[in-house]
Length: 282
Length: 109
Image (tube, rainbow over all chains, first blue to last red; front, side, top):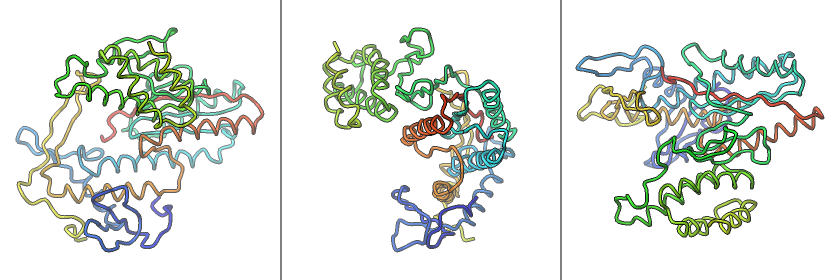
């Protein structure tokens, strides 16, 4: 798979920027004290060495991990992602020219260990059955040691990271939904099942409680902006978030104040809806 | 391979990583195993190798479902809805959608 990377000068080397890893790239090292150069070959050797030499101490005994990737090692997240990308690559290759699934489009997303699959097909029962078969085939394509546990999903609606995806409702598509807000029941309702969302305003320990509260509200709006796509989704995101603010004792005037400050950070197509929601808050 | 040319080795108070358990926030009856590499002699080398591997993964031109940043979620969802729309146009029918949500247990072991 390494051979399938984009070509560049010094393509067998990676230059790591120690100060800002986002500036790291494939290619040769130029002058700079905070840069490190490492070859593909060395990366593979080090990762293999790490995996094969994972030792731990517990109760004054030295243990060796013999299965999987070294627990806690700084290189382990990247190795885990590599394994999963390889599995997915082989799976996509196996179905690409398979005539049985010629009327199917298999897609989805994964963040670390959270997997969401979407299969699109024509709306006739035999093809729908094949969609389910395709999902089963994907689950079975994982190595035996990687066990997938199904998560709550109803009506093609499910949570992913901090957001919720609605494949049966293109008017919403995706939205931030507060963890205490139930979207799967017959009635959408709020229940304190995920615990208190924020440090309550009157129980804060900081010297600047108002600042802390407004920071919390701001962080929530940032999550809403990061996971919400449509106007209807924005309405739902705020409907689910307002009870979180209320239960935390956040005064409405502060919520509105932060809403005003936050407006320009939203995509332009959501700003009118944002203003309407703010004006409706009582 | 000269490892110390890649990154400095940690040579003070070196220690084999010790294992401990931390309760999971979602369910206090479940525990997450943690190993501290803070005093591991190769911790910086492993970190650089991990970062290098991540740079390679981000440039891979192959089919996969990995999202490298949580901020990429929205664009990925938009891309899936675009695929649904083009499937609809291509087949001239309302498509059927099947979804699956899952979580890999014990990713590292």
